Image (cartoon, rainbow, N blue to C red; front, side, top):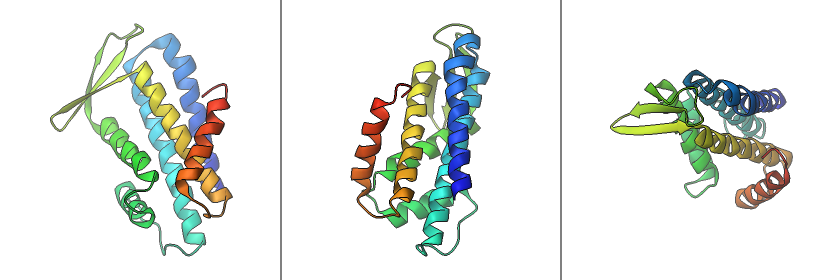
Length: 173
């Protein structure tokens, strides 16, 4: 569990560097795609840490191997109105974007855009949107850390509010 959380935090550091250093100087779609991949890896590690914690507390018997099944199990455990559902949906969406075919627009310029083509839908990933995605996964990792730190006791909505307030004061958020 601790190892998974540490892995999630290491991925967040890599995403931070990709956005604020690599992307700033290269402005290529390859860096955007790599950043999406690192965001997915951070989500994977945090979800695994949460599931390992729940298994340790006997809230579940085994951890599914499939990421899609993991999200379904977590949604079932926490309920339909859980704050986790938005993060889990975002995670699944990022996975779809990563696996999709994509085009580029305005490479080597400030408005570099990765255009992902999903089932009848076009999603544009820009520097600004990937920064928002980074902040979202950072919030999710902090929420999982808070949940595990409180031994699964308390209201998730209150924990989310607490985490968002803490991150708001972080200079790098």
